Image 1: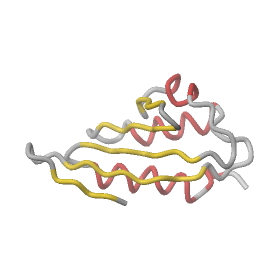
Image 2: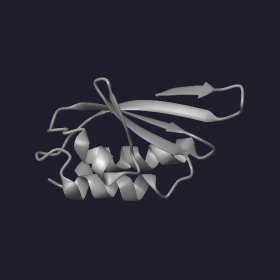
Image 3: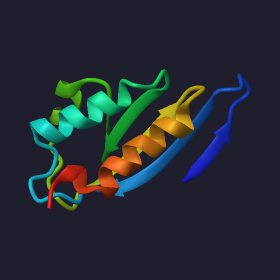
Image 4: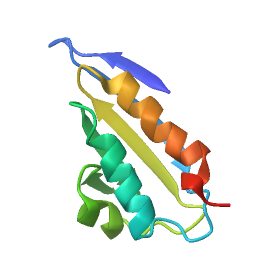
Length: 99
């Protein structure tokens, strides 16, 4: 997990995750990500390969087409970036509530 202090005092943090659940990023998982990301003021970006999307947009998250085993980088940027990343990390760690 990298923490970078930018000159304008905005915190940016990134962490990579592997999609753990059998069905990958389907509608319910995407909705959980968006609902969680939307609780924070920080910008939340999800990156797969060279594609970066808004973590607060369900269509953007679904457009990543992430099956199980896909590596996704999450970048949060803003005054509550640490809390936002921690909340998203908890989703991945809990396998989005799926077995």
